[in-house]
Length: 135
Image (cartoon, rainbow, N blue to C red; front, side, top):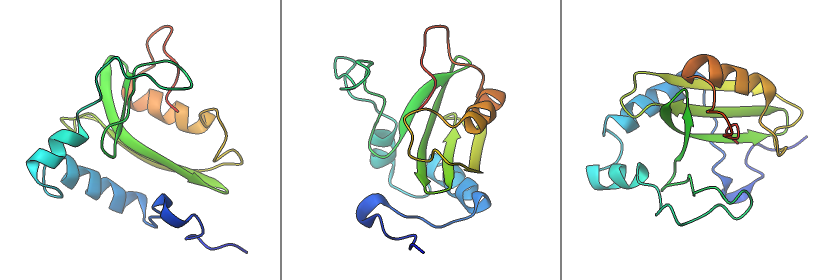
C-alpha cells in the first residue's frame, strides 16, 4: 500500500478530469493568476536554451510545457504515478483542449504512453516530420 502524497514536493494533485478541465479553462482565461504571471507561463526561454537530454530548444515555461502538434502550439502539464498517466493540454485560445488519465504500467517510463499519444494526435494532430512525440 502506498500513499498518493508520497512524492513530497511533486504536486500530488488528486482531482477528476472534469475538475482539471475547468481549471485549465479558468487558468488560460486569466481567472487563476494575474495577467503578468499568466504571460510568464506562456513565455518560453530564449531559443538558445537547450534541453540537456535531447538538445532541442527548451519547451518549459513557468509551470507549463509547450509542444507543436498538427501545426498548433499545445500548452499543458503531464504527470504520472504507479499505474496511471495524466495530462492537460490546450491551445492558447482554448479552441482545442484535452484532459486524460489513463492506466499505465509505464507511468514514469521514458517513452510516451501509446494510448495517451493516440489521444493527443486525435485532438491536436500529429507531430511534424522529424519532431519527437511529446514527453
